Image (cartoon, helix red, strand yellow):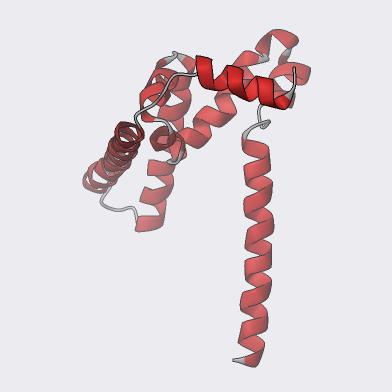
Length: 148
């Protein structure tokens, strides 16, 4: 099938989406996830007043990652993602989803060659890109400090 024929096929069979509604859902769900994370900050500050901000932040991150992984494991996070689109993948729970989903999908191929090998198929390139970008940013910041 040629590119032109394929594009015609896609345009005739693809569902039309309402972009404004899609953006609204992404905004609302992403905002709701962030509000839940903020709520955990308030709750953990009350329950653990002796902890400093960095420990509370780490606990909230772990809680949100656990919730994202758990909801992915029971099939709920994918249903949220259908309606929320980018609103469900941007927060930290989306990262957990991007790690757990391939692990579940390739679990039948075994623990080492399936689950462990495929776990970072989606999240791995993002981690690498973030690491490389932070190294370059650090170098630029360091050079700017030499001349500033």
